[in-house]
Length: 189
Image 1 (cartoon, rainbow, N blue to C red):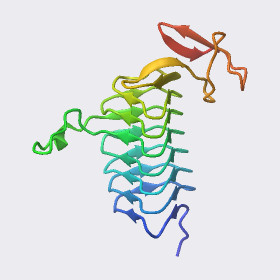
Image 2: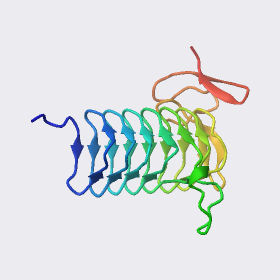
Image 3: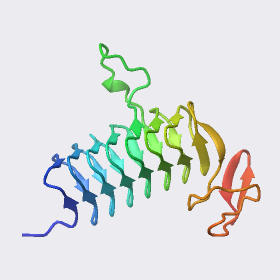
Image 4: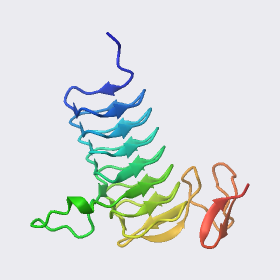
């Protein structure tokens, strides 16, 4: 008998056809639906639902009470704060079946989504962006953007390490330098 290379709490359900990477932990009362792929060294907190057919990259941290519906794709090192929300259709109605209208939501590498934030489906969150707690994202988010409010607006820029950048665009933690071109922030090579 081989030992599992990941941890699933006894109160959680993992459907057939799920792939789970080495070093991943799935905690209490989770449900991972068929066709979902979870990368290495991830953590799914209490009461996380993922799937069907969701993709979660390596090193992702998904806090308590998050549902990742079909169409959500998290690249590596994404952080989803407690009770953040991903929608799956843009115009839901209880009396209209819209399962064929689920829109793809792409969350790029290193993005952080704060507690109780809402991500409207069909959007792309750029790499290393930072979505403030309670924000409602209704449009695509540029890489390294710091977004807040309802609807979310860019209120600044953050570094790869998540630190707020000042006017000099130098990360106070790492000293890494950034530049803005065409309203997009990029590290200086």
